Image (cartoon, rainbow, N blue to C red; front, side, top):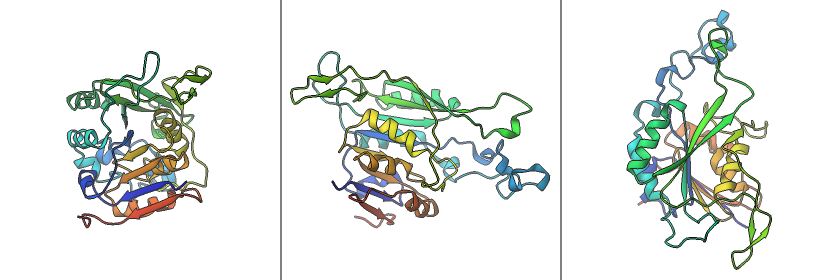
Length: 280
């Protein structure tokens, strides 16, 4: 089976230039708007991670320019258009629907803002997710306070509960043919990727983690879109699960590096489009 993956060096607001089908799942790690303090509690602030060596070139720097100009209202406006419409009919009592959803990675402090903007654009419901690490990047704060070792996300949906796959298989008539599925909690372990996946972005999310989320909320053949694709790990995760994937990345430098990460299976098709506004 050929898996279609397309990554555009463009802003997601220009999605109409590309023949992208509507998505079952839109998933993205939005900029945290922390500006020049991105490395504030990270050893990378100093040369070789040691304050005895003085500050590195990352001291007082932002991770990426979008931290300064990201517009969350525009993000929800366009993502709303990128998602499929909700099905009109119910899937039946005790079953999840085929409705789409969004997953937004954000900081804990951003959650109220994300929820408020999501509601304005029709996403009235949400489920908070917590990801637990066994390490913390805040080592410079270790002697001052409890260090953060968690990440957060919100699953956002309109009216109907989104498609939910927790191990239940159904036959052609929609009847369960295996078990009731394993309960899925609202917290997940943060599993790092191995050396086979290069680290090309400072806020890169693990492919293993993204695969877990994608397999819960989509089926094989569904469309997944990442409007802030960054390293491209979302696209790789989707491809490895047999989903079609589309992404946007405004930085040409990060876009080029993402190609090192997006390594589809042998039977997959990949299309990397370097165009920025050149498609009509």
